Length: 608
Image: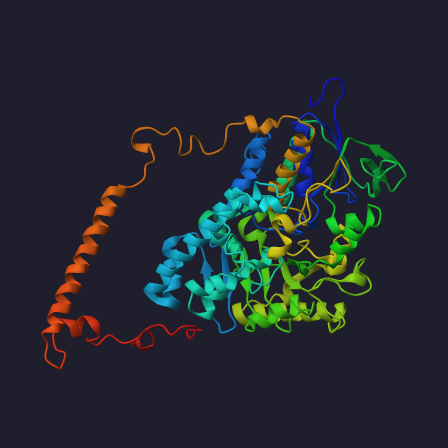
C-alpha cells in the first residue's frame, strides 16, 4: 500500500507494451490498476494475426536488447523463463541481398564476420570493424545507463555531469552513416551497417550516430525470437499484472480524460460508452499526439506536437505460402541500389521509393509452429512515408519533413508498386518465386495503422528521433500542467521500440511513485548479473593495469626517440650536399608511396 487507509488507484489507457508494463509495476507498488484498451487484444502493434494455422507478428518480429526484457521481469519478481517465454537465437542475424547478385550474412559469430568483411575490405577492414564495434559498444552502454534509465524532465536534466561528460562520445551531432564511413570504406559495408536506423523510423543519413547501438546489440547480443510469437512477451506481462491485481477491459475505447473543474488535475477517464472510471493517476499509453489532440482539451502544445517530425509508416504484407521457401532465412533485408534516394523518397517526400528497400521475415524458419507442416509464413515490411493528406487528423499542420511540394499520395498505386516490386526483387535476387505460392494475403497500409491503433499520420514508430526530438526535447513523461497525468510509449521519453518502451515504463512508474513519496519496490530487488565489479575477491577481483609500468615504457620510448633524432641530426650535419645518410632515410628517403598508391590495396569507396 502506498497510503494508509486507502489504496491508490490508476487507469492506464492502452494495452501496448508500455501500458501493460507500467500497469504491472504500479500494481506491484500497491496500486489498484485498470487497463482500458480499444481493441479486443493486448499488445497494440506487438500483436498477432492468425489465419488457418498461419501465425504472423503484426509488428515487431525480433527481440533486441534482451537485458531490458530480463530486467523488466526481474523487477516484477519473476523471469521470462518462469512465465513460459522461450527465446530462440536467430543465426545468422540477417541475410542481406544486393542488386548485383551478392549477399552478406550478419552474425554474432566473429569468425563468420571476419570472413564476410575481409571478402570486401581485406584484413584492415576487419580491424576497422572491431573499432566500429568498440565505438558502438560505448554508445550502447552509455545510452542504457545515462539515457534509457534516467528521466529528462527539463533542459537542466541534460546538464547532469554524469550525462554531459559523455555527450560528445555519443556522437549525437553526426549521422549513423557518417560514423560508419569512418570504419567502412566500401559503399557496400556502409549500407550493411547503417540500414538498422529504420528501426527508429529514420534515414541513416539523418539518424544520430548514437544509434549504432542498434547494430551493436544485434552483433554482440544477437537477435532473438519468442517461440509462439512476439506477443508471448506481452501475454506474460499481462499475466504477471493480473496476478498482482491488474484488471483488463478490452474492446473499451476511451472518449476523453476526465479533469477537475479547474482542469489542473486528472481524475480518471470517460469511456465511449459514457461510463466514468475515477482514478488518482492516469497513464496514457495511446499514441501521444493522438491523445493530446483527441483525449485532452485543445491546446497550443497539442498543435505543436502535430507539427513535429514523425517517423515513417509502412506497407506490410502477411503471406500464407503453400510450401516452404528455403532460399529465405528467418530475417532478410533487400537493399535498394539507389540507397540514399530511397530514403529521401520516404522521409523528404513521404512517398514509396520506385525501388524500395524492404525486410522479409519468415518466422516459420525459426519456429515451425508459425505455419502448417511443409508451409511458410512470410511477413514483408516496406517502409513508406507517413500520411499527409486530409485523412490525417493533423494534416492541417503536417510534420516539417513534408512540404507543399510533396506529391499526392496515391495509396492504391503505391500498394500495387510495393507488392509487384517485392515479388520481382525476391525472385531476381534469390530465385524464389513467391507469387504462385501465396494462398492468403493480408495487408496493413498507413491508413490501417492509423485507424486500428490511433497512430497519428499512420507513423508506426511515433515521433522522429532526431537530436532535437529526444532527451529533454522529447515530450515529457508527466503532463506539464495537469497533475496526475503521465505518459508512456513510443513518442515520449525515452523513445520507440519494445525494449525502449519497457525501459520507459520503469521511468514513468518510478516518477509516479516519486511524486507521492512512495517507495519503489523493485529498488530492493537484487540486481541481475551477480556481484558485478564490486565485491569480487581473489583472482576475480578487478583492477587496472600497472600504470607505473606503462609510464616507464612511455618514458623509455621518448628517450629512445630523442637519442635517434639527435643522432640523425648529427649525421645530417656532416653529410655532403647530396644529403646521403641516416637523415635522408628518416626525413624523406625510402620508397614508401602515399595512401592512394597502394598496389593491389583497397580503393576507398570503390569496391562496390
